[in-house]
Amino acid sequence: MRVDVVSIFPEYLTPLDLSLIGRARARGVLRLAVHDLRTWTHDVHRTVDDTPYGGGPGMVMRPEPWGEALDALAPADAPTPRLLVPSPAGARFTQAMAHELAAEEHLLFACGRYEGIDQRVLDHAATRMPVTEVSLGDYVLFGGEVAVLVILEAVTRLLPGVLGNAGSLDEESHAHGLLEAPVYTKPPSWRGHEVPEILRSGDHGRIARWRRDEALRRTARRRPDMLAALGAELDKKDRAAL
Ligand code: 6GU
Image 1: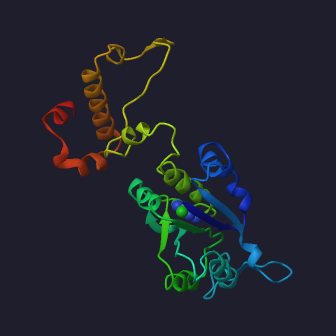
Image 2: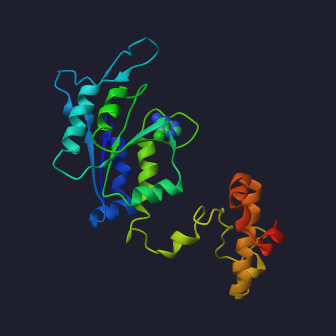
Image 3: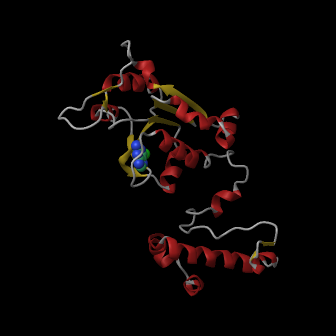
C-alpha cells in the first residue's frame, strides 16, 4: 500500500517511524511519505491560511498550496488515490472503514488546521478522485495529524504480513461485533486478585464459552448499542449469559 500525508506539521507524524508501522515501512509492505504543505507555497512567508469569507473566528487554509500538492501527489497519468480529509464534520471512522481502506492501493491524507481547508479544494479534488471526510468521534482536535496516526494504525495492522500473529486479528474487539473478554497472564495470584480458575483448567471448550459469555456481558454493560445491533445473531446460550 502507498500512503501520502500532507501537513504543515510533518514532525507530528514521526511516530510512524516506530514499532510495527516502522517495521512495515522498512519491509516495503507500506510505502509511506509525509509532505510539508509549505513545499507548495511561493511567497516569502510560505502562507497557507487567510481570513474566512463571510467573517467569523479563526483562519481558513487557502486553496492554492493544496491544489498544487494534490496535483503533485495524484498526477493525472497515475492510478487515482483515495483522498481522506480528517475533520470533525466527516463520516465516523469505524473498524468497517479500516477494512475498506486496507483494500486501497493508494491513500492520500490532507491534514487541515485552523478552521479547515477552503471547500473548493475538496470540490475540485472530487472531480478527479474519491474524497472522504472522516471523523474519529464527537470531539474537536486542533488538526488532522493525530487522526491520521489513529487511522493508519487501524488500517496498517490489517495489511497482510504486518501483524506478527494473524490470529490476533479475528479475536479482537469489534471483529465479531462484541467487545473482547478480559485477559490475564502470570502470576496466578497478584495483590489478592486471582486469575479466573476456568482459564487455568485446560478445558478449551469451557474456556471458549466463558470468553464469549464475558464478552457478551461486557458488551451489554458498556456498549448496549453494539449488542442491540447483533440482535438475531445471538443464540440461546448467548442469551442465557446475559
Ligand atoms: Cl478526524 N479531525 C479533527 N480536526 N477533529 C476531530 C476529528 C478529526 N475527529 C474528531 N475530531
